[in-house]
Length: 122
Image 1 (spheres, rainbow, N blue to C red):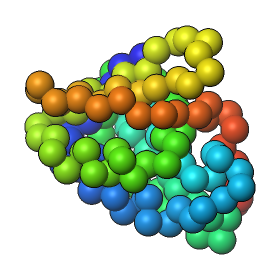
Image 2 (cartoon, one colour; image 1 turned 90 degrees about the vertical axis):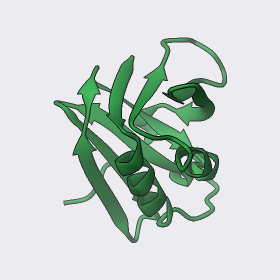
Image 3 (tube, helix red, strand yellow; image 1 turned 60 degrees about the vertical axis):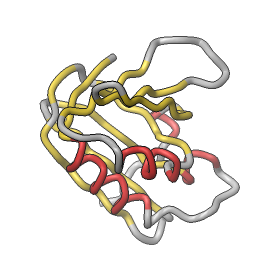
């Protein structure tokens, strides 16, 4: 699965949303839910008290994942410019990854299944 977003907008959104996250004994709660759907990229973070969602335009496939412990991705994304490609691969690996690439720069980050992320209350 592959989608494209503006690197600067994604970096700002990821940095903003990740500030909501707190240490947790539940691994998926230490992550940011990233969902590509209908031409939008939506990033969501929560500590169960506060929910923060940011949406930006995207192109590509519809898919979602939880970026586990996103602090490394926040640091890496500040070096990306122009169009950022985000890819995941259908594998049965014990440690699935997402690859963020922009020009010659890229980073590989741990992910978790989106199905494990809590539903936002109404």
